[in-house]
Length: 290
Image 1 (tube, rainbow, N blue to C red):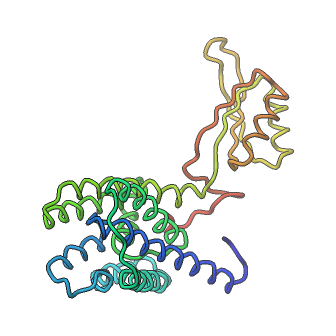
Image 2: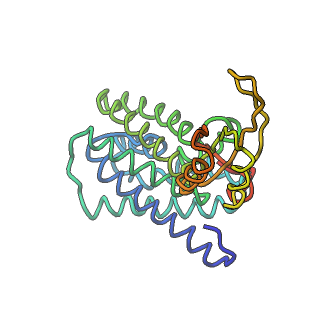
């Protein structure tokens, strides 16, 4: 959401953070803790510590463990990260411990818990990352590692860190099965997180090969779409052709196919997923982008 009103922007961002924190606390207390499945990250480390020192609440321990990462994060991304992430971490930890005290969820089938817990966890973390916040731990560590490993998605970075913690969790609780369920859950959460963070780009790319490329190009321009003409040559005929390259929102795909086939029923239309599109009408590049 982009708003010229700073107050509306602020309310939106912190509303998303609150929602993400609530989903995080719910998925932990509903799916992970009752079934002894590790969430990975610093929450997983807190689970391990809580095993040996039950008097220390998991939410409070998560806050303590995150302090060094926040210090590094502020140096990289400024005070805004500190304020929003401190809010997310604090409210998330309070919700986590508060929900645990208010209601005790019963264990369920571990596979169901790992699948649905992973989906809910990925959505919660993805929501917070879209507004520049994290609950600390895995997400913040992955966000900082993103500066070094630009080619790896944020979800895959989180998965790598979580798997290490889950292996330690398995050694602590002597439960290989629960560790395997945790890995399933973290893998699903990485997919859900990438879908939330990168899926919001909502863009596709079309390569259109037609003998009426000029007319096709004009028609797409009339639809307020940006196009690029590429020089090509037919592999069989050797004839020169112009390939129309067009980036567009997913909701426009039906209109584009209808417009092109109306002009040339024999046109080749190759539609590809766009991981990210930067430029007018889409997102803008930022050095701290995911």
